[in-house]
Image 1: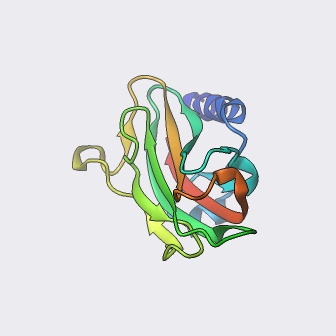
Image 2: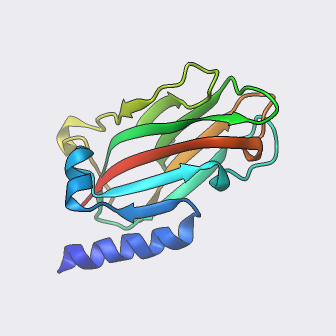
Image 3: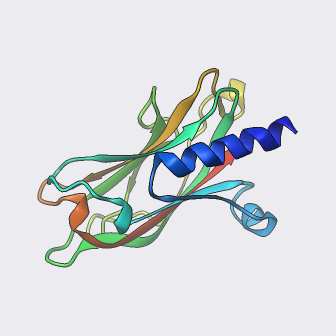
Length: 166
């Protein structure tokens, strides 16, 4: 019962924390994605920063006593703008303490040697690849464009981040 209440709290908090889609996975999706039970889907509609070379952080709230593991990140469609090719759109995934705790860096730009799939990094051998939160925090997904681009100028691009949250 505690797990159901915890997951409901995570879902409700996440719905109000950011505009990107944050949803549970069904059993088939979970199996296909390394046992993940949640996915964060980010596309160009979620990237609203209008200043060139300025990062934007999308957040998902995590309650205390939750254990989090990023199983993988998938670039569905490379990021680019209508006017010019994008040479960099770096993505990191972390939390309020460490900006790249779960994913050190992943290139999402169409002309930046994009990486289509990357597995999350292990946090610590003592926590078996998970971070257990002793206080409420956030998962922070940070998108950083190249120096000539604003994230809001992106016309195509989509990423999925798969998490196991217990």
